[in-house]
Image (cartoon, rainbow, N blue to C red; front, top):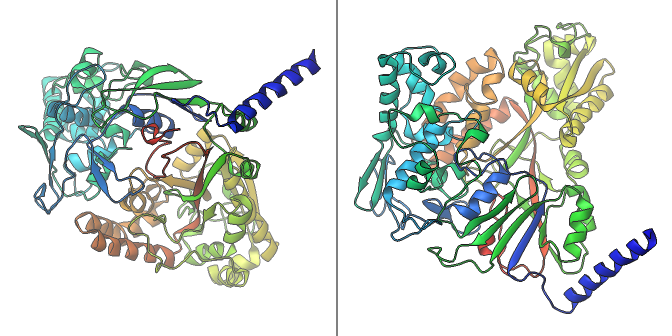
Length: 619
């Protein structure tokens, strides 16, 4: 029976291949993608991951969209114009934006798009503000600054106006009932700060920002899920925020499953939700009344198929049209007949090695004795510029790219990845491995004491990340090679433990990545360089003090400018400073690829698109 089963499978495979060779394209009205990711939600306000983003892309539209593969040119979408200063739809030095809302656009349930839907959708995204979510992207431009700094959560203004220490202080414990009328009024006043940004005049939506914010259009573009446009009436009917000032906090920071729009949809996009089998597949059905014309295919399907071998076989026999291929398996699909591969596609993402300027020594097993005695490192070890420079020259960047990334990455020269407008070849490149210089700086550090005594420390990576593990192992190897007294241990931690140790400042050196929320260099410069950035704020008091003086003023200056060329000059200056100070070890900018059957037409690459665009595809 076993032999018969094997023969039967082989026969079916041969039949499928024969049919394909005969010119019969399987499922001509359907495109099937097989990948490994999950879809946590279908609510645009919650979505902050590629899996959800890819699904939302098919169902919902935004005000504007990127022009094909470009990340710098826009085309109209639900707005019939792309605001610009030349025609007077961007005014007040980049603080007022006028959008002409497209008329007679249908939502999937038949409702007609109105300017009110636009305002509702954006306001809901700000007040939604779930923990760890994307609301900060709209909160920063739409809410007034506090003490000269952008506000990344609506909670900050509620706390300030009420005069309390935390958002929870406003409510009766365990509820979302304000403790008193003063606190309730502070909450209402907070919403009014947001609401006064919006004006509806006829069929126009006019947005008045409280301050200039150059990346604003990027944040409204298709691909940023949270700025997708919802049908207000439908959302309210299904239990979402009713759009009122005196209730918004009841719909703030929900849990995922209690979010009423978590698993239902109603967009204006080219596909409706046909079915979603959580953890297995999602199917999109063509919306024939789409304002831009119906899609060329009737169905788009995304399947979760964890095993690469299964995905590869499905691709060969035509049961999958597009599949995810890990880099280590790339050669297995390169010479498959009827398969097309697009390689070398730069991701707007970088990985860096992070030096902790002030390591938290309390109960910290990663710094040994905590002293410069050969058995540990002092807590301010990486505050020493000579130490940082020594490690910069220690790392084998090119070998790392070749062996770990199999050539499918490039070495960045700053936190700005290649492809963004502020990427500049004139910024000095990554240091490159030079063991002679590494010895020179190690001997110079601490007036020779470090070289003579040596050091002991532990590097930590998150379990399962082979790139980060290998980076740490390479540091360990070359440190011992140039001085046997340099002892580096490497250990792994589960992601949750890794995050805890990172946030508490216990990790001496670690490797992390950052991917673009939107294609503007501010989205990279701020997290790494600002004293309150995601990474900058965790590097200790020495870095924070230095960044407040040297980086924060430049960062704010860049956001007060409208012209990209002038902003790019500011970012170039910041990146040169970062290089000269050896702030980070710039390791890699990954390159992506797409593997698909050659009968797929219309595929294009845009690094800001999560996944594929079924609307552009045909067979």
